[in-house]
Length: 127
Image (cartoon, rainbow, N blue to C red; front, side, top):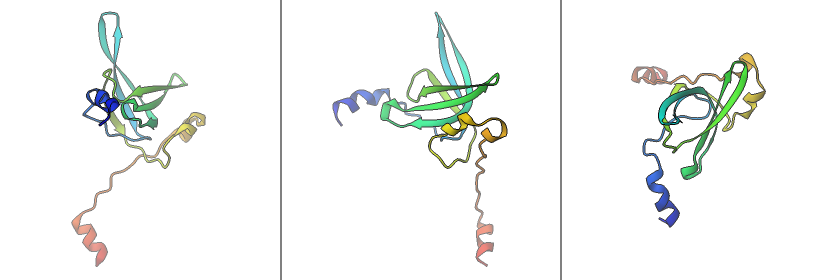
């Protein structure tokens, strides 16, 4: 392990959030206003992720009063309390920048439905 990795190791978060591009996420972000701290919740579509070690970031887009708002969050920041997945999305791209030009129903992402294989269903298919 080189010197840079030794310095970055204690700053990495151990509980890595498991979400992907296309998921609707709820980010709990700590805001410091003077001496007070509060948690602000930012909910939107994850449209991009950049994986660069300690510099990992993800971009979340939401519509606020008819205006598209994007925000980049550092994954390993101590200000990001937690990231909840509200809805898993099914996408075929790594970056969803094309969503910026879409309006209304065209800006929707299909929902990823979990697949459950049962023993009985698998046996019936073979017969």
